Each structure stands twice: as C-alpha cells, then as structure tokens.
Amino acid sequence: MKLVIAVVQDKDSSRLSDALVKHNVRATKLASTGGFLKSGNTTFMIGIEDDRVDGVCKLIRDNCRSRKQMMAPMSSMGGNTDSYVPYPVEVEVGGATVFILPIDRFEQF
Image (cartoon, rainbow, N blue to C red; front, side, top):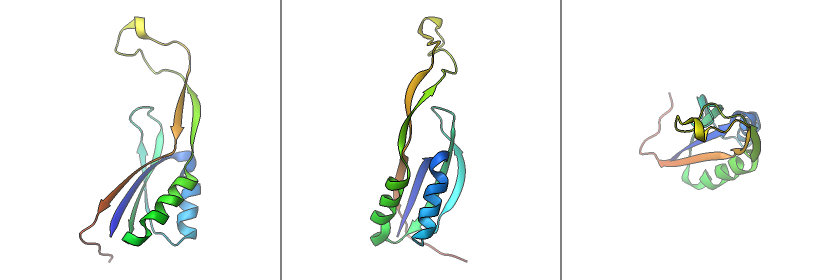
C-alpha cells in the first residue's frame, strides 16, 4: 500500500478529480497554497495498492500540465532596491509535485 500525495495547481484540480473518479480512485482533496508564488493549489491524498501506483501517476501526469504565466513581482528580491524587477516576469506554473510514501497500515471506518 502507498500514499500518493500530489500537489497540483487549482486550474488542474477539477480535471484530475474527474479522472480519478472515472478510474475508481478514491482521494481526499485539501486546499493548499504554494510558498513561492503564493498561489492556490490543491493537494490530493490517495491511498492506493502498490500495483496501481503507476496508473495513478499516469492520471496525474496526463491531467496536470505545466504552463507559462506572467507574474508581477510582489516585492524586491532580497530587500535591496537595486535588485527589484519592476516589470512582470514569465514563470512556469502548474504541473504536479508528487510524493509516494509506503504505508504500514490502512483502515477505513
């Protein structure tokens, strides 16, 4: 048994959730916030049998795409006004960060 923790951008959350339901994969969704861009994320916690982990990873990969987005800087970098970038910069957002952990015991009540 494994615990798959997938942190995905909110824009991909509904599409991934629908795909998980379609493939009979139970998941718990948690609202989360990214530390770097301070943007909304959704964290999925999925308890799954070992032989289904690759299939779940494929669902995540297929439904969570990275994309480029223009972001206005929130503040100066490092507190020095010389390093402040006053114009929007293009950053890559989206995709998924996935952690796969072994589970010693799983119970449902």
